Structure formats: C-alpha cells, structure tokens
Amino acid sequence: MQVWAVANQKGGVGKTTTAVSLAGLLADAGQRVLLVDLDPHGSMTSYFKYDPDELENSVYDLFQPGSEVDMKLLEPLLMPTSNRGIDLIPATTALATLERKSVGQEGMGLQVAKALRLVKDRYDYVVIDSPPVLGVLMINALAACGHLLVPVQTEFLALKGLERMLRTITMINRARKRQLTYTLIPTFYDRTVPASVSCLRELHQRFAENIAASVVPVDSKFITASAKGITPSEMDLTMPGVQAYIRILRGLAERSRG
Ligand SMILES: Nc1ncnc2c1ncn2[C@@H]1O[C@H](COP(=O)(O)OP(=O)(O)O)[C@@H](O)[C@H]1O
Ligand SMILES: [Mg+2]
Image 1 (cartoon, rainbow, N blue to C red):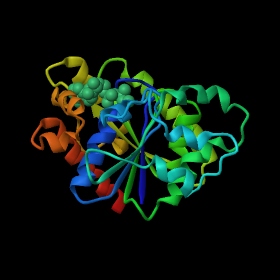
Image 2: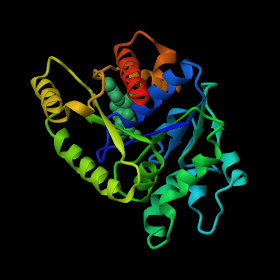
Image 3: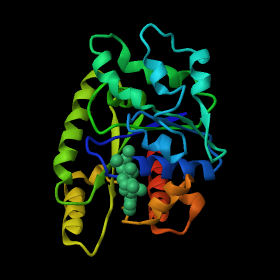
Image 4: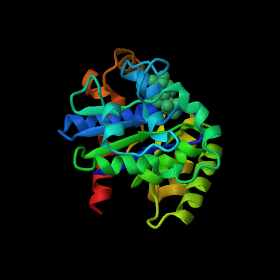
C-alpha cells in the first residue's frame, strides 16, 4: 500500500482536485484506493455528496481522547463513493475544533498513520487531502505518508507559500526516520499569462529534481466534475486537465519504481 499526502499551506491551489483526480485514475487502472479527508472544510467529502455538517462518523472519531484506533472504530469510517474503486474517510466540520482540543495530548500526530496500518492489505493506494494550515491534521498527513504531493498554483504569489511548505518539510524530516520525499505539481497553468509562464520557469530552475512530469492547465471541466460528484476521468478522459494528471501519475509510478 502506497500512501500519498497532498498538502500546501495555501488554499485554492488544487489540492482536493489533485487528490480526487489521481484517485480516479488509479481506480480506473483497477487499483483499490482510499481517500482521506483531513480538511475541516470537507471539500473532498462534499465532492462525493456527503455533508460534512451532518455526518455521524468521520475521521474526527480517530481523535477522540482515549479512543483505541482499531478496526471497530475504523470500519464505519470507510464509506463508499460514486466510484466502486474508491472509498472515503470523510471529514466533518467538527475537525476545526481539534487543533485547540489536542494541544498537550500526546501521540495525536500518529492517529491517521495508525489507522492506515490496519487497512494496508485492503487498499493499494491511500491519498490524503490536508488543510492549508500547519496543525495537528497536517502533521498527521505528513507523518502517515510515504510521499508528498504539493500542488503549486502558477502565479505571482505562489512561491512564497511554497517556501513555507518547504520549511515544514524540513522540520518534519528532523523528526522522521525516513526522509519525506515530495513532488511539486504546477496547477492552474495558463500559457497565455506571462506571470504563469515565468512562475513555471522559476519552479523548474529552482526545483528541477522535484517537479512533476506535467503541468495542470486551467480547465473549467474540473468544476463540472465536482458538481456531478464523479472523478474528472470518469466524466471526460480527454479533458486537458485529466490528460495532465495521467502524465503526472505515470511520472510518480516511475519515481516509485526508482
Ligand atoms: N486546473 C484547474 N483548472 C480550473 N479549475 C480548477 C483547477 N483545479 C482546481 N480547480 C477548481 O478551483 C477550486 C479550488 O480547487 P481545490 O482543488 O478545491 O483547491 P484546494 O483544495 O487547494 O483548496 C475548485 O472549485 C476546483 O474545482
Ligand atoms: Mg481542498
């Protein structure tokens, strides 16, 4: 089982879209995929037509003080989606209270990692969507994953946000036995916009080693797919955005084969 986290300390950069698009492509290829929504906004949960304000069970349950992370706790959290190959551990808005509550509670940083260990034979891939703030939820995502995907919007201010994320990776790596590897995924690319082109050029100059095999263009069909609650590739395999994620996924597969 491979675990990828999608993170960036900036909202609206395409994190949820990246997680859902890659999960969809993996499922299309017959892989068993688990998506984990760690964002209190619950965008990924809403994507699959669950209401993060109404759900009884969610990833929040893993963080109840004193609760043992076992199959009895985890099983009800593994919810089906519109795609037969994808299950989802949803988020509820209650997650937002967690940062405050979990202060001073030891071991809360590994709750997701512990849960995923229980389903390692059940899924081939886990993709974790994380919130844009560095707190206990993002720490859980980074601690549980084997590889990190960082969507970066190709625009003027993106590099500042990216620097913050890279500092977080450095900090995490001081605590981890195995170094956290990462891939930057340029998103919202528009080759007719000079700021977009120059941002991409700078990313390539500074992070050549860590750039994804393709760039995700602005593609309004992503919004249509999310409104329908199906993965982008299920809706339209030919849309440019999906074609980009296909190339990115191929690059990630090559990378993990070494
Ligand atoms: N490449 C893209 N082109 C056009 N719209 C996109 C693209 N990627 C994401 N979007 C849309 O932009 C919004 C924010 O994307 P999202 O993936 O939710 O970002 P994040 O999870 O980082 O906040 C969503 O409405 C999504 O459908
Ligand atoms: Mg999101």
